[in-house]
Amino acid sequence: MRSEAEANRALELYADTVRRICFIHLKNYADAEDVFQEVFMKYLLRDLQFESDAHEKAWLIRVAVNACKDMIKNFFRKKVTSFDELTAEPFYLQEQEAEVLSAVLTLSEKYRDVIYLHYYEGYSAIEIAKTLGKNENTIYTWLSRARKRLKEMLGGETLGK
Image (cartoon, rainbow, N blue to C red):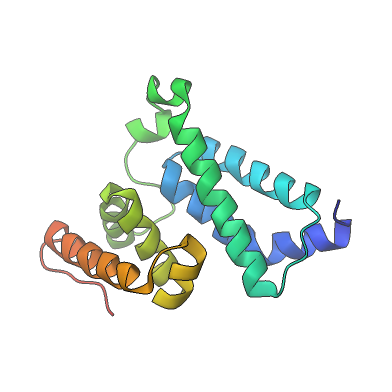
């Protein structure tokens, strides 16, 4: 089990990233918070020694993505429409940001993940490939296809490379 100092350091460094990943996947604040807590509980209880901060962050991202997938598979979640899905765009986003985020959220999971990690977290394609356990060229292809789909959805607006 990790110390309180280690836990606080990890929360300071990675809380926003994990929370955003959870929200991007689950599109629901309450579920995202549940998974967020689950991810950090696994972190606290796991005595894994990380090679570097980047390895630690990649581990947290991978655990968050897997926990989100598990929650999405949950029977109850499939049979219920959340209040967040019924409401309009998130209140804390500007109109253009909300439009882009809405478009990103409609992408398939693989495209949504690479777009988020690349543009919101600043990972390179090589780093994303290592984090997701995919081939580097696959990540480049997914980024290209995701950009193309977003451009179509947003009426010609495009994300920078």
